[in-house]
Each structure stands twice: as structure tokens, then as C-alpha cells.
Length: 271
Ligand code: ATR
Image 1 (cartoon, rainbow, N blue to C red):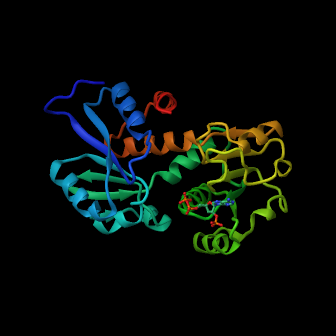
Image 2: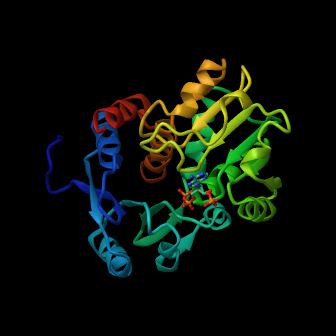
């Protein structure tokens, strides 16, 4: 732990219930590596306390708050400004305080595209996104923004269709449609595989050379990633989405390039 003194600045993550978050580990590791005089804490904020929590953050001169579930939508009404991208995605995961003003951004989409870009360029690629919840919205936005062609598949096909229509992806469909069309990139944003050995799709639908990203990070090697590897695909763990979205948050308030490898190590150690 770095020394805390009168000039130390405060950042944190707001979430409820408290549960487990690796954000403090990642951000404090980044502060240490970059010599930034700041600390990062986790705050368990009840939904009805969100407004007062943000007013308090502003009054105390908190520099940045990451916004986790269940606050990503509700937080918007308490901000002075919401970035156009966050508005389009429909969620804010970052509040940065600039000159006393609360500015809302979304770095979840950046996290997803940078995680994929560890393995592949995205322009012109055929991508499939599994799921149609909040995480899917950020991933679909990011893929489209990078010039990929995107298909959304979801257990409830109507939700996939609605998301696809709204963000401008190809017509959505059910999960069973995977394999009807070739794809270069596959991203799982469903919760299937979370602390289980289930996979959202059959292994034989994944071809060699595909890049597969699983937003599920617990366990680190999900069944989907194991299947993908066995089929000769390249895989990216959900950890990288979280590390890269945190890296973008750090850039937003400090302007510094984040020490991504150190943050990833801290993420692992906090598990
Ligand atoms: P998040 O905001 O994290 O994306 P969410 O909005 O609850 O969370 O979305 C969860 C996603 O996982 C949804 O796409 C959900 O599919 P439905 O829209 O059909 O509910 C998907 N999901 C959850 N459990 C699933 C399961 N057992 N099989 C397939 N998909 C599942």
C-alpha cells in the first residue's frame, strides 16, 4: 500500500450488494506502478442512496467512481453530462469529476474491443455476440464502432432482435442459429459458464482460427474457452475486458497510459 497523506486523492467503485470486486486491486496496482498519490475503495451503495452518494463524492472531491451493478442506468439522472457513446449504449460505468462536474462515460465497450484486439483486428470481421443484456449492448456497440459486421444471438430471440435493430447490427436470432453463417469472432456475454462447466453453444460450432472472448471470468478458463481452444480457436478471457475497461477509466481521469500487465496481475491475485 502506498503512503496515504493529506494530498492523497480518492477514487472508488459503487455497487450493491458489496460482493466481490477486483476493481480496487487493479486500480491501486496502477496507482502504485505510476506513482499516483491516490487510493481506490469499494463502496456498497443502496439504490436509494445513489443520489446522496454522488452528491457526497462531488462535495468531497472524489476524482472518479466506477459504476457497477445495479447502478449503471440509474446513475445517469444524477450526472451533469453523459457522453454520447454512453447514452447510445444506455449505461454509464464511469463517473469522472472534472471541476466539480460529474461526467458519465462508458468504458465497457472499450474494454471489450481492446480485449479482442489482443488477438485480432476487427474491421471487416464477421462477429457473433451471444446474449442481449447490458454487457451485450456495450460489446455490440464496440464491434460496430470498429467496423465489424455483427450478429446477435440470444436464448430469447426477441431481445436479440430488439438490440440488433436499435444498435444497427444484423437481424438477431436464437442461440441455435450459431453456425448458420461463418464467423471470425465470437463473444459470449450471457452468464452461462459462470461458476459452472456449462457452455452457451456446442463445441462443434466453433471453427479453428476463430477468436473467442468470454465475458465470464470466473472460472478463468470457462468451458466455452476450453472447447474453443480444443477446436483450434484463439481465446481471450473475460479478465481482459475488465482490465482494459479499467485502463480506459484511468486514462479518463489521469490522462496516463495504464500499466495493463500490472493490473492484470493484480486482478489474478485478487481472485
Ligand atoms: P448483463 O447485463 O450482464 O448482460 P442480463 O441483462 O441479465 O445481464 O443478461 C443476461 C444474458 O444472459 C441474457 O442475454 C440472457 O438471455 P435471455 O435474454 O434469454 O434471458 C442470458 N442467459 C442467462 N442465462 C442463460 C441460460 N441459461 N442460457 C442461455 N442464455 C442465458
